[in-house]
Every structure is written in C-alpha cells, then in structure tokens.
Length: 350
Image (cartoon, rainbow, N blue to C red; front, side, top):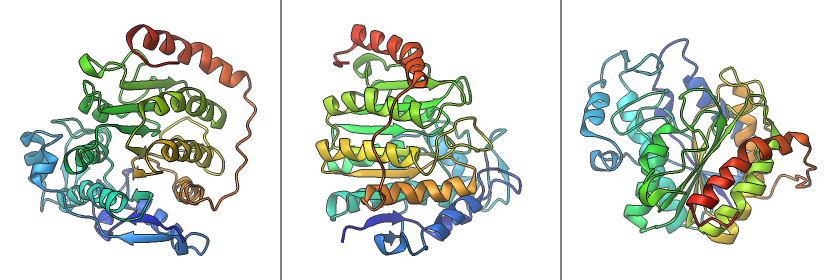
C-alpha cells in the first residue's frame, strides 16, 4: 500500500510569536489531530525532521539574517518587524522547519515515497535574503530547492505557490535562475505588494517567474482554470524533476486574513489532482508540499487531509467542471496580457 510521508515534530508547537498572533501553534496542532483520524491515519507515515546547518541556511540567506535569528535564542520575545516575532524556541524551530525539507527530499529520492508533506512552522515564503518578514524567518521552500540542486543535482525544479499572499522571498531567490520555475497565484493588490504579472524574471531567468495576480473573491473555478489552462501546458514544457508546493491554505473561503473562496472539499483536491497529473508525466509523481499560511483551523484540517487523500487516490472527485464567465474574465484581464508578454519575451508555447 502506497503511503504518504509526513515530516513533523512537536518542536513546531514551541515557536510562538505572541498570544493573539494569527500564526499560532494551534494551526499545526489542529492539522496533526486531523491526521490521527481513521480515514487518513493508516495511509501516512511520520518522520522527524533533520536540523538545517548554518551552511545550508546561507545558501539562501545572509549571515546577517542568520545571526539576527540566532540571537533570539533564549529570549522570551523579540519583535523583528510589525508582523514577525520570535520566542526562545524560534531559532531552533526554524532550523527544523528548513531541515524538514531535507528529510522530505531524502524520502522522495532515496526511498519509495512519491508524496511528502512538511508539516512545519514558522512558514517561509516571505523571508528574503537578509530579511525576516510576514511571519517567516527562513525560506523553507527556497532552501528545499537548494537541497534539490546541491544534494541531488536537479536542474529543473517547479515551485507552485498557492498561498493567498505572494511569495516575494521565493521569487527573489530565483528571479534570475532558469533552473527554478516559480509560479504564484495570489490575491492582488495585497500584502506584500509584489507579484504583478509583469514580474517574469530577469537575465537568464526571464520567463521562469510566473505571477497570476487575482482580485479578491476568486474561487474554485478561477483557480482550476488557471492551473489547467495556463500552468499545466507550461509545466509540461518545462519537464520538472520535482514539484514543490508552498501550500498555504489562506486561499480558502472564510480565512480571516484573506478574501478568496477556494473550497477545501473541491478546489484544493482539484489543484492537487492537476499537479499530480503533471508530476506523473514529468517527475515520477514526486511532489513535496510545505505548509505556509492558512488561519482558519477547519480549513487547514480539511485542506491538508483532502490534498493527501486525493494524492493517494483515496478521494473520489469529478474532474469535470464547466467554466463560466468567471473564468473568461480571468483569461481576458490577467492571462491574456501575461501570455502576450511571455510570447514576446520567452519561448513558452502558449
């Protein structure tokens, strides 16, 4: 029986940015509790995360940022920016959140696993080279890509960022790198202010950053249309050797920090299914999911569970969807100008 790998440690409950902070330990505790239920527990296998080394952190970050976070060790509370704070456990927790990516890649490339979920916090996709921001300390998914490059020699890495917020840190890490195709779909204009469709990379990386900035209140139809009609054709041309997902679930309906309307019961499984289809055609079905945002507890629980069950083929879902004027508006207002730009600047066949 195929099993799905979960990388988790109770250390992830110890990072606490403050009593009323939305990025609370309860988020991951709730997901963990959901994974103990009988519909999913027999199909997962849990592994403890490695601890990232300083050298590995410095692949993506400056010594300044490393030292800044290290110096919070043992201090009950340190405010790094208006949104981002640490406690005495945050530095070690952040090293484990990065190290979990190394563990996941070992399971995907050295064992028989095809799917892995790094159930970690703090999240990472906002963290820049020398800046912690947006609840993020180190950029977990960016260093996952460096692990894939440096330890496994991969030359084609596809990062899908479906978190409600644009992953400015991940984009900056690979903006001129043709070995990493970074695709983000996000609410715009919104925090952190980046992610316009005109941001397509620079130098050798032109065309390897793809941003889909969406207005508020988009839901299943818009997201599925974008993944099927825009992302999939480009991903199949790119032929990734692994797919990595910055899996934030604040794109779901009812999230307190966002205004999107994707559903955990249909939208998230459909996006997972599309990515699985791409992975099966290009990279032996290998996908690494890493937790980013998501601040509605029930959405977190059901989205993670439904994504895993769908990946394993244990959730029946109809792939048929009839697109309406909602999808047509996205095509006309966002995808059409982006496609024109890409046809002019890149070699993608779209």
